[in-house]
Length: 234
Ligand code: FES
Image (cartoon, rainbow, N blue to C red; front, side, top):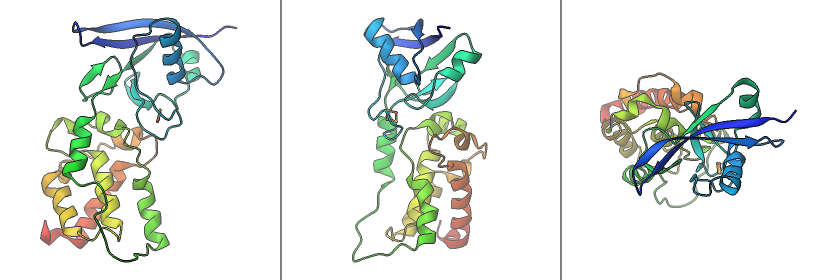
């Protein structure tokens, strides 16, 4: 039996401001992902369809889109389970991000916040040994690929001062990492600048992270860490 994928894709053209949905039918190919389906549409039906991708292997985090209202990596998400259960699948750009065109959004805000929060290890001197048990704790947070699925699905991100799950996972990683020595700075950035305690504990970010970073779990661990190590300094 020939299987067909029916996609209702959000379109936005900045040249004329037109926005709405276009419906496309794509023939199923074995192992087909949503990213492959986008390429088939672009090659065979509408060359103007715009979407982002790079690695095609779930590593770069650039291909995230909303599929039936849930953020997914288009290069990892298989279409077959959708075809077997639904007539039409809705594909939209990441929520809470400015749309550039069709499924491509502007990530500038995330980049600016990364600069603001210094989400990298500052210079350190000499050799720093990371005990295996500490390495295991930071491993999870370090798996983040900056795909922004958690940011786009977090209801509290609408409060612009709230840093968001992506950044709290980073704060946790740096607080645990012995190479990052300015812990007081990290406490203040997380609590005062990032408004850590405005987290709603809804766990939506845990359910959406494609790398199982579990930002909500890390947020709770961050709160415990701050309580035990630095409450007085915040
Ligand atoms: Fe890199 Fe999907 S294209 S994560």
